[in-house]
Amino acid sequence: MARKPKPPEHPNHERWLVSYADFMTLLFAFFVMMYANSQTNKEQATRISQAFREALQEGTFGHALSRLLKNEPGQTAPANAQPVVVLPSMASKQRPVELLPSLHQLNETLKKEIASGRLEVRMERRGLVISLKEATFFPSGGDMLDPKTLPMLEVIANEIRKYPNPIRLEGHTDSIPISTSRFRSNWDLSAARGIAMLELFAERFGLDRSRMAISGFADTAPVASNETDEGRRRNRRVDIVVLNELAAAEEPVQGGAGAKKGNAQ
Image (cartoon, rainbow, N blue to C red):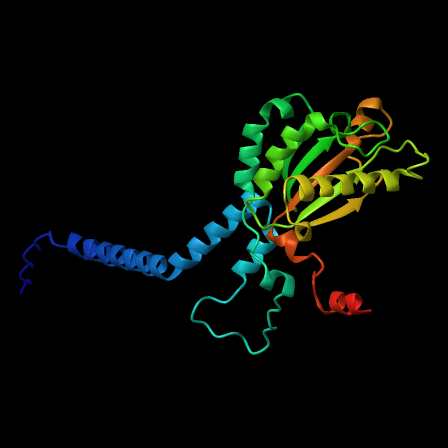
């Protein structure tokens, strides 16, 4: 006897629900993962953003990187972690501050002098550098400041007085040798110009001497070639360097036990 044919199957119109359910499950898991990730890394993302902003603005990339490598709040230090040493000079004094506002302020206040080439203001890795050109501030081969430049120097002094950052006064010359009754070499001349700046800032404008130090580089740190008149003119300068936090941390400790011992002798 012939088999009775099977009735035709009705098409299943509900199969789309399977795909839809899978899609919704994956979408839910995706948003849960994004939410969890944003909550756990919110603080880390903020720290990274702040650190890189500081690095770009002040050139203190090393300091920014060291902050990122520190332990998170609430974490315990690894067993092999090294202790953090705070230098006495940094612990006993005010912490150096950001110098970018001073860069903008000086560029605005002294824009005429900067445009005329009498001085230059720039940000370097070590901090804020105010470069004074010899032709404007000193006579050739001398260390006596031109009185006409005092208003410019007063603007600079008033700006750097706002911050506790250490200041370095660096004298530079060109490569042409000098030998006079006052200066035996370019070393003497470059150091003497740094001293002249220190005395002016301390005596006339009241800056703390303990913030300042002097360096005489002679012709060993040129910014241009000494083969041309223009290059030599640029190399004859005094740089006022306001150190940022990274550079200040590498400075020698002042007023420590060694200094006291030396004073006692």
